[in-house]
Image (cartoon, rainbow, N blue to C red; front, top):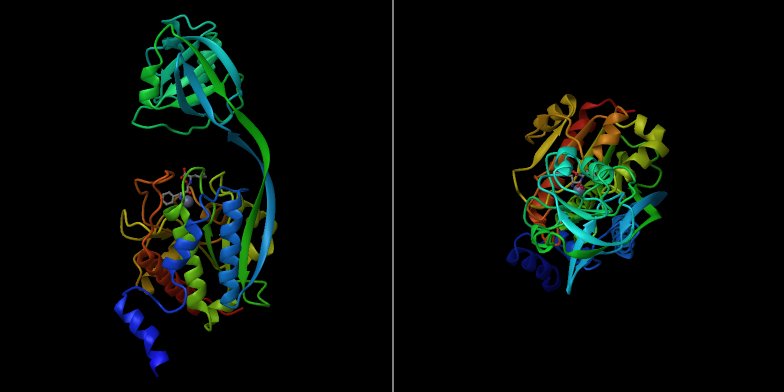
Length: 385
Ligand code: BES
Ligand code: ZN
């Protein structure tokens, strides 16, 4: 009696703590592995941990591997006299080291801006904004610059993408670094980049014997470099695990796939790979639920997608709206004709930053409960196969 009472008392005395390993425990365990950049050790450690959790709940797991080339900044900087100033190589920048005088170009780097100063053989400095990075770079190249520095138009540094390989090194810097680069001063711009093949892995959890699920719950497990990814997207990952936990012993468990996608931050690559490699599974889906950034309440839970699922959500007592928002793993499924719902709580201030260390387990579990209820509503109204 005593033994049975103890955990119950503990759970009562610590609100939000459920028996067994809680969302809070999982969050602590996974965050210890560090950022989960696709192809990194932390990414694999997190997946192994979560794989074990799905198995402990009685699910089987399968891994789907895929590879893709990725541009990586290996550490880039500008040496100005005694000062070593750091920045981020823009994606698709040329690598290399150039030593040349600085020229501060007035403006954002339009062709007209470059007419006003002579940048030939120099490292040109322009402001971020108004026109795409690639256009600034083309204008700098055409004017004869040997390197380009783009200064952020708000505090701090930034990461950007050119979208096409260019022949000059292009570095993005903070306003502080930009101001430290004085006109005429010789600087050494060092951009160290590499292009390598990344190994990515999707994790699929399912009940033994389930080959054709009706519902797929997904979240991306990967994070961007330098960000612990607590809200983006350990929150969605743990919500998917919590849906799997709620489904145990109910019909839903035998009609679902639970997916942890990799490579989302490199362009939704995990969900694209799954849609491409499992066309039969995808064709048979009645719903795909994607959970991304659900651990910080920037706004109350937003659930949006196609009308029939929005109606199912409303019947399940969950507020939802019609819409087909982009920029996460529901997109490839929607493009393949699958009805989707996207669950999120808005873009928090620590998005893609080192400060993304917090998630609220209660919000994660509330999201899981909403997804669980909607899925059951979908299954109860859809004819059985
Ligand atoms: N978690 C974000 C998407 C997101 C944004 C979810 C706002 C909820 C609210 C995702 O990881 C991301 O950063 N996506 C990229 C695009 C992707 C194709 C690389 C983005 O939004 O810029
Ligand atoms: Zn995300």
